[in-house]
Image 1: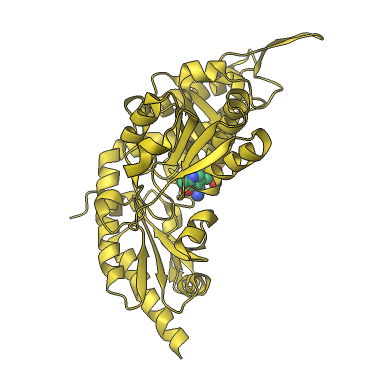
Image 2 (image 1 turned 90 degrees about the vertical axis):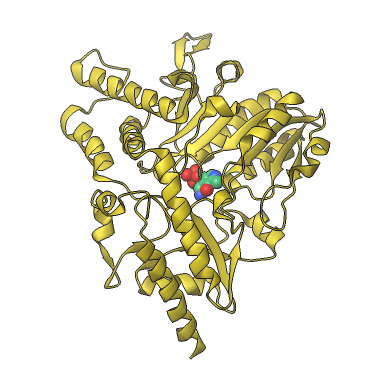
Length: 410
Ligand code: PMP
């Protein structure tokens, strides 16, 4: 028995009724970006059709209405991630911008040559390249928490790695390639014990499981709205108040100032200090509607459903001759993504053949080239699941894989 009423949920996602190459769409790429329910589409369209005006600027009704809806979205998102206050929630474009904001604003202001940043070998480029650039420009040193053969973090050497030089620790809550779910708490506790700050990249976690940033006690938490039923162009950086207050702005211009004279400028309060220019407020409102949708289902139920789907997918894929599953095969520590290779078939060819069957998966390095180097693989295939994924879609994936194997044998 699946934990969610998936048939009912699917009715909210019009795109799932579309056909691709003459076949019903089997959408298995939600880890890259999820589909959107009508509730999100309607919330945004309603603003454009009925109340639209820029926020924070007008003294007239439409502008006040936009500002109220925008502030309400921030309150909803703060509640969703367990932030102590909406002021801890900075609207950004996506997780990439959230992580760059920390690397530029915190990294360049508070870190110096010789300081160390501890990350993992399975980071997405978004949580890798900003630190690599910081290493080049500022002279910080990057160190990596090693992985076990199974693709989990090997924390046995963590205390050795956490020398007094480590000022920042950053890692993915859930790996977008291995699917590994890392419990952030022990790492955060041990990093705090030596005075390091901790960033959690929650891009693949917040859409799929309950997250409580206050309970985690992380210093920063980054996520992208488009992976959690929201629109593109909106993401979140959660930050602890004292850090956000101490950090200089990332970008400057309109909205983020308190006052400007010819000689001087002072900044607006947090979080507006980090939100230069007209914000993506319609997208924020869309993300607020997405959060309402997820909360109505319940994040425990979302996780339970994905655990069942991924367990089923692991079982089915394990039966396929020549298939290798990349990352943990224990569904308890695996998010809703199945990454795999098929012997003698390039993942791109597999992706193309699956597309002919209407099955959409991702193939490539999934923006994690260093991890693929570590795994000794150029590319992998990834099928990823969400609240609208049905067991029969996993069956369609497996059938399509068999068909691709057969086609390429001829
Ligand atoms: N981190 C992880 C773990 C991701 O999976 C992704 C998206 N694939 C990102 C960061 C970057 O997200 P975005 O492209 O939305 O900025």
